[in-house]
Length: 213
Image (tube, rainbow, N blue to C red; front, side, top):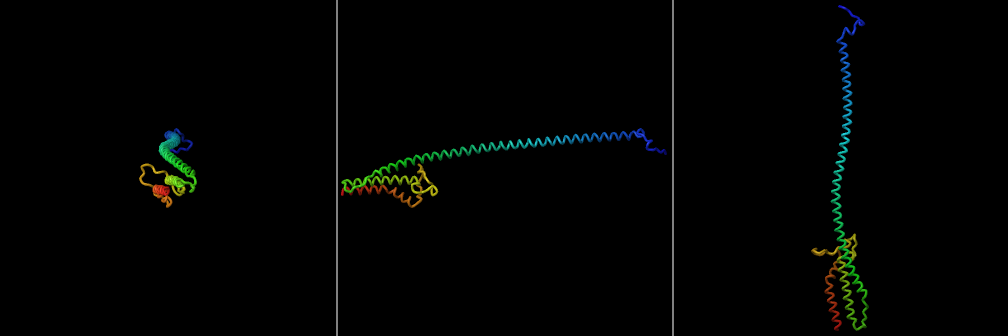
């Protein structure tokens, strides 16, 4: 058997082995290039995914805000329209109450003027009985106006806003029945308002009898 020393062995003596090593190196470089390319593509895909996620978040936020806009617009249209309707109705009620209160004030001023214009009765005058009857009639008429105003406006009965309704609106046409009196004094006023015609007739009859006497 022949023995060969290391230095005596040449690459030409092993052509297949050298060629295989070269191919392995080339495959390794190619795989490295492929791995580097894939890593670059993966990084690009990650950046693209992050961009898409940001765009998705922007679209979702825009959709949420648009939905909030539509919901808020419909809510405000409904609430504002309802509030304006309630305020307009309250304004009309307040105007009607103000008009009726103005009429009540005119009636009370007229009654006050008539009562203030009453003259003292002098029993030495021949017609003092007639004058007394007129004065009593004027006072009864003034009392009737006052009681009527008290029935319409509870403020005149001494009730404050924190104790009752403050200014009670007069009874509207079409309402059935009357509100119940809230105190004994108001009940007495109701009774007086209902019985004043009888008292007035009695006063007139008394005056007539006195005049004839």
